[in-house]
Length: 367
Image 1 (cartoon, rainbow, N blue to C red):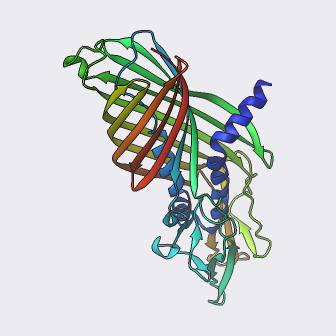
Image 2: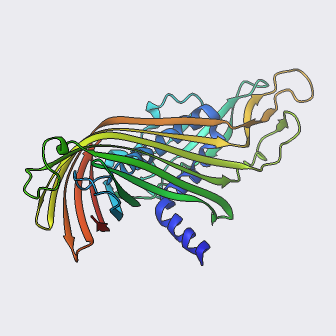
Image 3: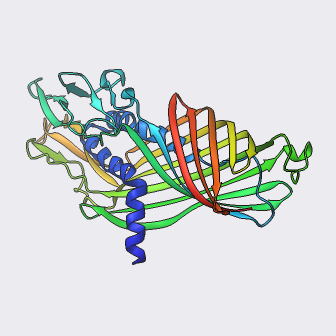
């Protein structure tokens, strides 16, 4: 029962992330340099939105929990996916080998259409006759056609005294079979701290104090990976292998997202309602890597001999790695409602990186 619970939770949390990772292999047959550029553009909206989601929902009040008092909150962070995030123009990437033929010159990102148009092609110029030959031809990978991206999260907090509260997010590493018998793994951890500034100006036990003011910071990290099976068909080419063919095994694509923020927030409690706002500086860095041995076309054999003019297929270990980094200010406005003594419900609007975010959560609050 526990295994099925984790699989269900993983699929709900990271289905889009893992599906996007598996799509990266579709660029692999186009050459490593161009594949890196295409994969980065394809995944860029996902890495941006996940970074913003990971930095959301850490605080819903500037008042810290009293010592040994706790809260447990389950929330959803929903981000707007703008039209410009659903496609990219490959002509702006500086591709050197890949040609794209399409009626609209667009390739979908991970959030784009599930029915891409056009073909990505790679040609080589034969040293035998000087004519171009088609090496590889492939349609772009499909998107998931999302206009709204939601990320669930669970967070626990505890008061430690001195006007300070510590916060935790944790999802232990779990392995599972997602689709096509490919094994995936995911884990998440995060921590934060909130410290009251208003305690130096007001008595925190005074219910008539003007407002609460605090500073906070948080750090979180997501690690995910999924196995691949990339074994392109070169049967249409006259090929020669450079060295013995390497078995296609132990291939995977991994995404590691590290997210950090520092900010300040104010809140005012009026009966069962708490109004709050915050300003923060956010940092998000997401690293994508392709690991394992991957076959690729190196070029033509130019040395005179029986293999002269044949297409050379080689194997490279860990061929792709790139990072997408985002920084900037973020703003939040929210309202928390308490009911039945220990339950709380909140809603929040946030703006960062030119994106609108709507966040909501339900939790237990014992303070």
